[in-house]
Length: 287
Image (cartoon, rainbow, N blue to C red):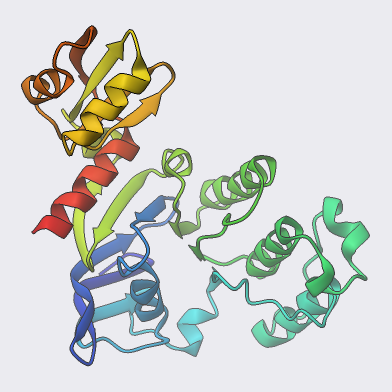
């Protein structure tokens, strides 16, 4: 492997439970790779293997061309779901501690917008501010690779946009980024997506490649509520979109039959990434 991070056919078992199954993944310099999946899909377990925090049951993992080690981990910035900050220390003290651990000498500066929080205990700060501090700490030693596990969870839309600006700036500077997210609009910011379900990779590529020629059925009815009820009673998955309904993974004929005599227009339209994501996840669960 010549990538910043990669794994080849890795599997991780915990007793009789297989959390990750034969997954291969690469992260190259300057690219943002989005790792998508529902809770329990295996994303965090895969990240922990990439970091060398847990071993593999089968397969190979490399960071910067060699097995994970303290030396290779010194070249990356990691923001876990728990942020990795000390609640009983201030942001400035967390930055000082990080500098000492990485041996960088100079302490990284907090972004100007966070300066007024420098002397407050991290545990007393709003979650959005805590996440920005965690980003600043992860970037302070100018890592070649960023690994971010749900970095914007629980953050307001403006805060999420600011964090994604930081991610894009890091990638523009040549760093590789591996990021997990539940937000489909954030997935659009990634150059490449890897979708996991039940521990496996079920799709990989750009957003357009994953959606491909996928379609859903669009229903425009005189009474959307009556149409919604009729489709639900027929066992179809249905979602409200504006004043219309969208039915993923269904045949237009089956939708028309489920509506019966209700006045409605039924047509196929291109799927969204979110709809394709749920379709892939459902197919994996059914298999």
